[in-house]
Length: 187
Image 1 (tube, rainbow, N blue to C red):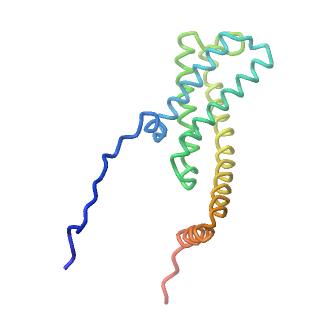
Image 2 (image 1 turned 45 degrees about the vertical axis):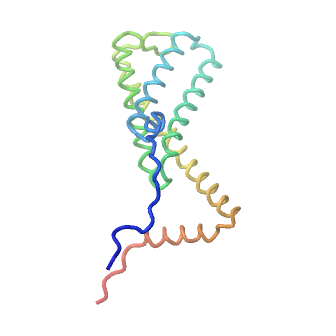
């Protein structure tokens, strides 16, 4: 007869809820929303308080914005295995760009969106929107591929340094078994 109750019990500690930042980083839509709003407001602030004619100013603004975008993406992807990144990264790019595009539309309607030293008009919005979406894909997808390669190499090196090469081999073998198509039925 099977035993339905264990002979020994253990005391379980209360599991704490994740912090607000942890819950935010787990959610793809929320991370993309926060990133899009932050980047568009950062861009609006920089263009209204800086000199867009200065190459140094524009370059540093682009670098800081790109670093912020990729940092937020990395924080989100760090919660998931590399296997899930192939769909999370492009979706993050699309949602983030969509948020930025909607923020741009709102700022343009209020007369706060800048293009260079001038104020943007509604006729400028659609070309800017397609440019934002294209640049997000061009930046995020290659970065994710590079990040996946680096993470995979570092994980294998860590397993090798801990003399756990058998674990790495079993993981690779299990992946091969899972990825293989089923054998055709015998005739």
